[in-house]
Image (cartoon, rainbow over all chains, first blue to last red; front, side, top):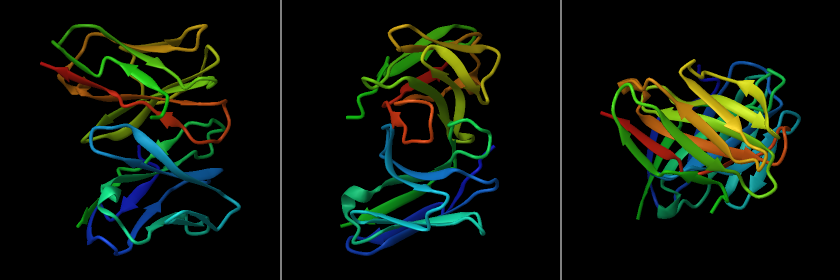
Length: 112
Length: 113
């Protein structure tokens, strides 16, 4: 079953605009990670935020985490056509293992 | 390039057959994870190996099995294949068994006819 659920399912914006994707999860976590998947390729790790962190930045990416609401958001600023991809959140849950549970993803289309 | 190599890239076979998917993890990584990605189920964790030992099991069918060899490469064996097994199968690796990023290969696309 999916632990994380991304919202929206699909997002279409113009180059230069910001893109915000949200993720909700059900159980307590140690970390939450965001991944990107280009069509037909494997997932690429973007950023990891620990449960005791509230915000993290990496280049044009900003991730927030609200453990009280069991939710996270990924903001991509000044989007580029190359950002077109599917974005997934992944949580490690409270199983005691390092395995990840992925949501179904948000498909982002950035038009030139 | 993630450093994780999966072969073959594509596999077409018939129902009832058996196939083996292979994964070479990133150099130095001890953990290997297998995932199945399909349109209806999304990305599902199947199984994890750490330094040759099975570490965690997810939604892996009894018809599926995996192993990790002393050189740390891993194989996923799928038998008695059904149409519903058609999917992308990904291997990922990480340095150890902690909470850290996983590095994914480009997957094997399995088509069952």
